[in-house]
Image (cartoon, rainbow, N blue to C red; front, side):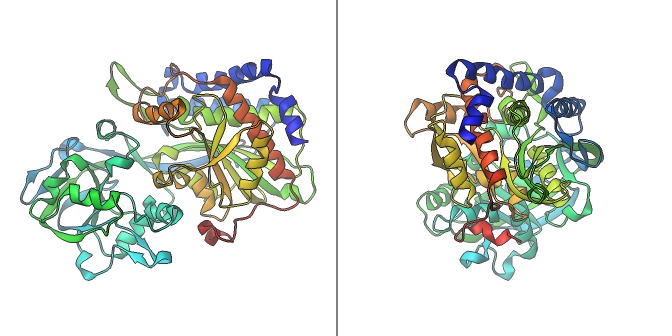
Length: 517
């Protein structure tokens, strides 16, 4: 039934996929236009984008799903680094070249911190695996230096959870650490150092609500791995040795560095407002309509930064105007086909994803749904850059939703793949993770590919050249037919989950089952 409905709804005939794709693309064109200036949180461009989504939700027949109509207000503290007044100084190496050697990621003023440096391996504390890099009194009062990543013998889910920002910060604070320096592993860096540091002065944000302020560390910095030997000078260790240990899963060394770091950081803070946009398609079953299946995407992007070849606007066409466009088109298609589901479907576009999943975290903490959220289907940068033959699903084997997406994709003869790059931690790096941490099963997606194929090269080149870059704009090649087919699969998935007799649940062996209530 679901397969037949989605084909009729979204244009199953080959001649109609392109038309459906053009309709999807029209939303991307509006949201990623230069006029919206990258949809940064709190900006006029974001507000214009939010107004656009409200209009589209109204046209799709969705009922307002928040306290203020369709809008859930979210308060933020915007933090801007005054880099010219800030400095890092090594006791034996002198002044650190900000931008070249390191960039400051602190969100608070730091008045002349002067502390010893200790290399703590991956900087992880994973009780479930009886693993900790943070044991011993020698860490108290120190600045912890760590390599991004984690030991291969520990599951990617455990590593991902404990290396998330809030979990790592909480573990470091519990160990008595006063600051942290993270060194990316070049082998797993999504964004080359040059582009990372070019964006370093973009404002950072925190949720204003004090309930979210418990897990943070005042001083933090990211260090260029190519310049890390100056940080390690005199310790008897080199970055090459450390990277070799990581790449070959050897035990990671732990040692005190031969020098201290002095840090002075000045930031400005200001209160701003933004909003999540929420629409609801009510379920038809008197009891099951109190349960909600969420379909989500993030509306914000990075805004405006330093110009590259005359262009300083981070349009965010794939990240994540594409996902918002799919949320809109799926809502519109359900209305057009007069599809009724037993459970309610909540359509959600969130603010502040690029600032650390903040809008979705706020919504998960303060849900506007008058009932129980039973699943989150999240679309963030699903990358329809080539024909849809494979669909990579993050969280595929964690919950019964994996069985549902396999069945939904089968209707269009699309093969489902598990996450091929689990060490990239993508399952915890987008808004689905805010729901997962409240016990809600979730899925996220990327267009799949086969290693060594042309599609694999397109995918990897996109991350290298366009991810969080001004090149993620309306000029990039996109497969409109494939985008429409993806939306059709999502419609089928939503129908299956919203009409199933039982709500989705975590599988017994899933790490994330521990969050279930």
